[in-house]
Image (cartoon, rainbow, N blue to C red; front, side):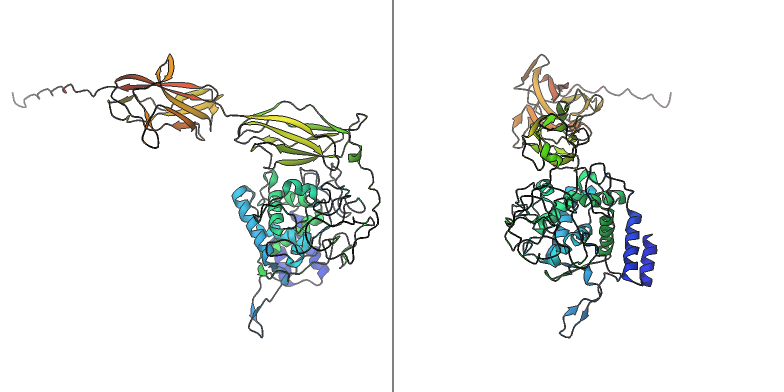
Length: 575
């Protein structure tokens, strides 16, 4: 299909409308089948939501409006030619140019993800495609040297008037709106998503959705969650739909992704082309105004000019000082408290997935279950445990029974207790805490991998090193803690003060080794051993976390100095 489409483009298209239909058809042919979303997510009127687009109850943008302009038909590979002044002038599509700072942010985010999640296979061109559709590459690259937008980029308030209904979740910290949420910054994150997806991409110690480095890295992590492999078309489609749950959005992003993959070039900041058509303006050339509900009068905390109500440009005037109308009631407004919904004890061995999931129920004061409420689960404490996909926060919508089931917890290597805290997004009710524990890896069996007798002469060194293998329930026990001690006897586990010994890094004698762990195959080879002048039979005891024990016999004896028997004289060849 892609090859056929390319040949059609080479021949030219009669009109822009024909080109748009062709690109949309190409994108649609790559998209997965979709049906109505069972979570009640609101999308644009021309969009069809995907049932498996996201696990965190919504989208990065809250399904806010986006730019619908499609890439031009001419090749994005420019051929420079000199101008009258001698300065090279880009010939071909200006759309292929990406503002330098914005382009740098995309590429740095790709590099970071290549190290953090190499299996995701995130291309920076995908970030560029989303950045184009969401904000026109930060309004043509109107950013400061550190990547912060020169003025806030805000989507319309999500008050349910033509858009999704998302009441304020950040007290206006990011969007300046204490009544409703608005998508913020060059990658258009809503505050409730930024709360867990936000990243510090430029190393200044802050997570600012208005900074293109922070926003690009956050978008990269968002697109790489749930163990998606973006080199796989199905996973790529799912990731894009999770950003904005619209089939038309998927088609548009895929079109720009293909365009940027053919070639791009850097242009000066502030000189990029800003798109003109938006999904909430019926395809017209000018951005639509926000819905009838007026935005708040106060300004966002981020320095800069007054925010625009849409990603497309300035609002054309200051917000009205009139009081906004009271928000309509939502299911969230009726929640009185959260209750446990039968969560079992949360315990897992380091490195394993927790067998049980957290279930939380949203309940009214009268005890009635509340559906379609967003519950946020946050991992709290000194732990490297995460939810599936590597995140420490997950947001889930309650089902028809009022229950939200958190994603599975994946234990890290750090052992100990931590807390998973459940809260209601958009409503101040008491949090519900769940205690969880990660226990150390254990083994129940320990054996030597060889059977060669371990012998040594006084003052010498053992020729062979001890190697052991640990298992747990007949399976390999990797990364299990091991201790090795040269003890006085099988009946006396006190460390011996004579006989065989190990050496530390300084060459000093040690007879107890700690901090050892088995490898991925459950094996561990101990350091070389030496012997003092004491002869006899000695015991090396090796133990693991979980109680597996192995006693290894060591022998120190003088070398055998008895003469070798003389060979028998050979029979005479002659009689």
